[in-house]
Length: 245
Image (cartoon, rainbow, N blue to C red; front, side, top):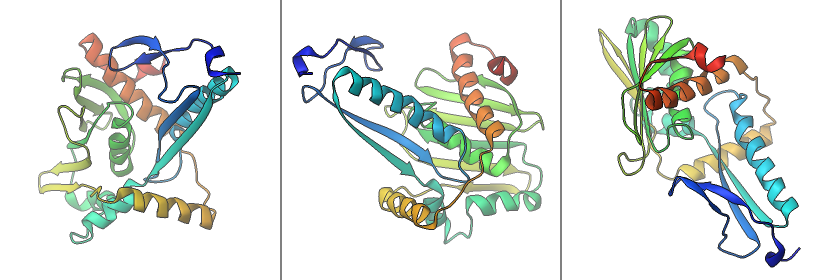
């Protein structure tokens, strides 16, 4: 099938907030870049969502006559957290281990720059890696592009998820725990990140690692992000149970 015979396909433009005809830089050729999994701990169902969805898009485009180049990265945030915090002796794993000695954690924050769902999921996952699951509701008191989501847990703990798009906030990740005795933070250094990503990916392949899949936790993480979006749109607190109905 030639480029001139390609069927008309419309895609949603986040720039114009409406559908527009698919126009590629090279006629007949589509380049796709997918932000892949953040391998901060054992693999989970969320790592499957992106590849499955975009693999379907890729296959549809190829079936429709386009040539497609598809590139996926693997983000290993924890390697950089370890590198960043080596001088402080604090990693995400150690942060979780420190909780009993820190005392009751009633408040925590996790932040990152960019989109609430596609980047906020990484920030939220770091919090879950340290604090565990148990969210019951979300209240987003921010504005479009500037999300400030209070996530309330059944334990009574509140987690503030703050995600700002590039025009409001620079990239990067940080998690901070607050207790009566003080605070503890971990912030990865993203310098030369992709060198670490490639090495981590090669190590994973060479060692033939096998991972468990904490399905319930990943479903909850996705539900929290959806509740945060819905809360901003509807101007009210959204329970996780509502989202999971």
